[in-house]
Amino acid sequence: MKRSVQLGLALAAATLLGWMGWVTVQIRKQSVVDEAAPADVIVIMGAAEYHGRPSPVLRARLDHGLELFQQGYARRILTTGGAGGDPVFTEGVVGRNYLMNHGVPPESILLEDEGATTAHSTTVVAEIMRRSGLRSCILVSDGYHIYRAKKMLEFRGLEVYGSPRSIKQETSPQDWWLYLRQAAGYTLWTAGINL
Image: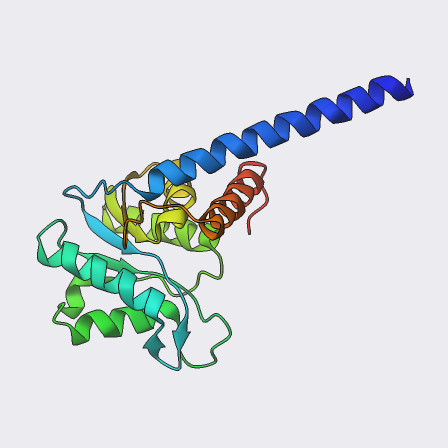
């Protein structure tokens, strides 16, 4: 009996490791592909903001989304992200303000400013899009983040094109760590645990 339990645990561990390895490779593949295509809206995933100013990561995401908007890929932009501990500003509002300061008309910007996690933000984004009659989006984030957020939006019935803020062809050990963390987050999400 003890041996069969050990064998079962070893098989489960091997299966989980195999799954995590496969998902990590898929995340890496998605991270270097720009699928930008005409869509209803450009969704820019939030990142840190500092007292009303976008962090370098958020600014890079906003600049990429702005470039896609200016190239005519979509007529609307949706900024995302909650407060992240800031009592005054949210990532979504900081993103919206940044885009307006760079010439995007306020009526072209939709706002999701509640999400504390990727799962929360994508759920609210899907609802905003549904209520606005929008069915397709270009998803802007960092490459390592695209796969998981894209799958979450597709799960909600949306057509999603990933467009990373920059494409990094070389892969460092730190990159693989980021891919593995996203694989863990994705795996937990598929198991019904939202982080």
